[in-house]
Length: 507
Image (cartoon, rainbow, N blue to C red; front, side, top):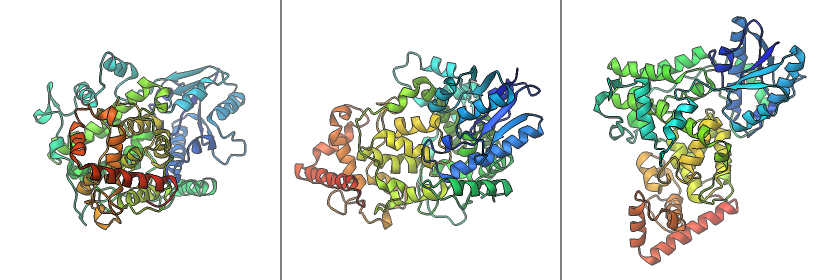
């Protein structure tokens, strides 16, 4: 009997588990562009276009290799517009007996597969370097699941940047050499833009006609096949990796990419693999072309953080998405959807997100995420926004980053303290504050930076939870040492900011 082999839009790897287990001479590969996935949240138009164009090219490649592919285009008249519906349609068409799938990166999709009225075999996604069983065994019995210890085990497992059983350079990470502010540099190389070909142009027209979501579709700059993804990787390693470490936390007005790799979309849809990108970076260090601090900082993000958050997503299951440890309930402010704002940092981060479907990790964590946490926004709304607007956002990686690291909704599973800061951090790591309507040096009053006001308001309202946290005790001592009149002025200023957000006014 024929089996249907489901390949999703973020599983565009020829060796993905379901394809490895399939029989090219008997089975039918099913790929489907469906409105149900494009509208599960209001995905950024560039994200939708990237996935659809890459799917079409991947399907064509499978056909050239001799696979029988049943491909549903978004505008096909018979398209049921759901993954489940297309599997049932192809079951009837080919007389299939079962479905073979690689585990999806979203609990909703996995649940839908389980509800199908035919046998479905779901194979573990072995493109990750740490299996589900390995992560569960690592987590077993630990009071705290700290990424640093997981990362060291992954270094030992992969052998990356290792000299025998010791870390290269004599230490596990080089954070003290990294994370410096950046300065404007007209000679800084910018990631290459990939001009749309005929396939991409056809997809862009379709997306324009079908989706009116937040975000600009054009200009569209992304690679949509493996050759382009490999070119993007090679260019990063040669041109931007040397400065990656020192600039990885910096923010500059008008400089969206700085020295970042900008390859996470290709990793997350399967055009690149984690070991090949890390080996390329390691080789550049071994060849003397980049400092070890840059190579180590990049590799930590891939085999450390990326693998770690995926392990958390699997370990904690769909219930993790409902976390709200701090009881936050405010609606997501209009600024996140492009509403007017006087805050230069928020304007820059959201504007860049709208135009590029991209912002680097500090813009996400310490600007948009920080503001949402300080303002007490419902974490589910923050999660849905991040999943919607970024080209590299898929639930397995986005949800732990947003709900855990950014919003502390998991109560401290991912981080030992909330990632909150006043405007001083943003001022130190960016050039945003100089042209802002607000004054980052002012701690109270109408011109005070909203981050300054909301930071202390957050600490004050969550005092019972965080006062005893060793990493936050010093800031509580600072707060308590302030004059009572100043504390009340700060809290009143914060309440005024929150009231304006609730009324939908410009902040």
